[in-house]
Length: 231
Ligand code: SF4
Image (cartoon, rainbow, N blue to C red; front, side, top):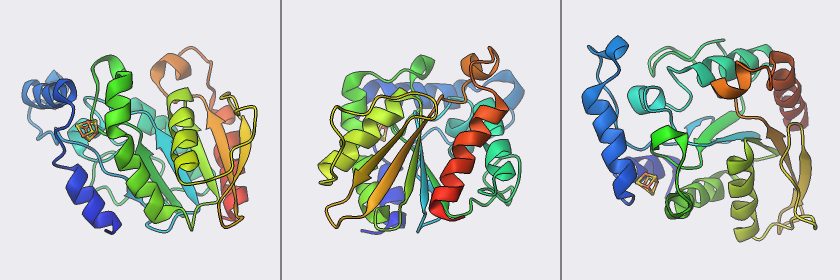
């Protein structure tokens, strides 16, 4: 399978009843400010460079963001924050990510959601996380020979990335690396290549509004990712 086939296959996945209901309910009801707009209302595929040095691993699409626009981190506040920073460090062609036809382009970078359907309160259950994990694994398997850096937005993505690369036979340091903002861990592939895992607080409003995550903190992690990947 290639990335397009994985994207097509995931787009019709209905394996998690609670998330299928939620993503479709939100798409049907719509937030008032988007009342006249179509909603995607389906799982969100990975997006960006098909041969990326940098992979950004998020949590799940936002109900009125990715679940509306059909593109990860597009059309919501977290995406605004993230793309402004990606643009500043040279990993995105534009500073905003508004809709799927906006001309935005990721540079040497790809983004994926750990759980591919929007969950209520942005909180997937452990069972939903585990049900969706094979999609992340399938995509990473197609990318891994190019990857130098994986940026994990939040501990949920950090844990999922560690599990995924362990399944792929990577050597993970012991004790198990702990998530934190600017945390770093070097994993080694079965072929002996090094891959750096970088942690970042998730750019959700509860972090950016409270000042727990500042622009310069985001730029520091994404800038480090760009340098490690040689972008
Ligand atoms: Fe399928 Fe993942 Fe969506 Fe569950 S969260 S329905 S496994 S795409």
